[in-house]
Image (cartoon, rainbow, N blue to C red):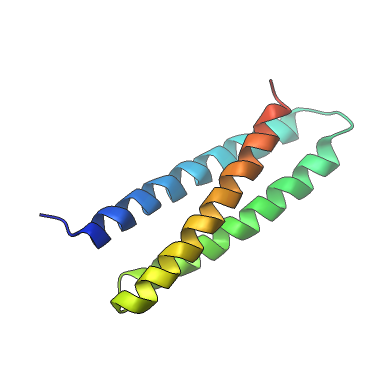
Length: 96
């Protein structure tokens, strides 16, 4: 049976992977679409990708750190993911 920590980490990793797929899809759409928002959208996606990379780095350390550090890291990662989510929602709104 999975511990609470393992369940949370699994959920975080799933969310991370989903956001990675969405980022890739948006990059393709941005390259295909030629309009005045292209430069702005590319910058937005670059910013989101940078946040995504920070999460990737944190995820690499999460399984090997102690409980106190893990809790703080989980809080940071969750905030980064919420920021990524908000950024992706804004970016997706340009394609509706």
